[in-house]
Length: 217
Image 1 (cartoon, one colour):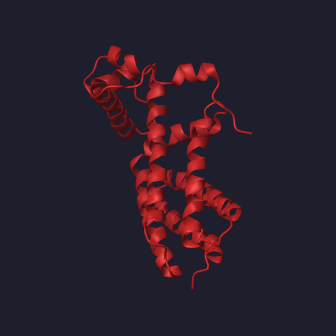
Image 2: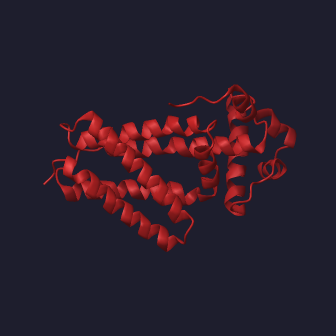
């Protein structure tokens, strides 16, 4: 059964105020952009609020107007990263469905190129993502996006084969999401060549998993 964030955790991690005007949105974007640059530069080391403020060209007080602590900033970055996946997957549903396995393989390859870029460019956020997954109070944040991704994978498979039952499509979507994510996390902890090889392996597993259900020649 899925849990909701408890009130104490929400208060501690939620942004202090939501940007309602363009100027405020730009300030939040500056904060998040600065935090992302620093996480990429520092690797696994978490940037301090002072360092984020200095990189953003803001005072620490300005940071605290929007975020209660650096953890809330990183959590917001993680949310933005998670929210980018549904759009990438939805692109595959907007094109004409493939008529044979080779066309479907090319569509899978396009998806892998897009999603791999999201992982590689945001590798420094993976410790935050893993922390969300391992924390019962934070896990609902990822569950929300997981549900969207699974539903989109299922929709994509049914786009390819409209006769595919919804329950089967959803089950395949779960496997596609979980295998893809876990294997990429492993790959990111290795060198780039190993990451690419693991990507190829995941693609092969995906195709072996779903091809029997797609009714393609």
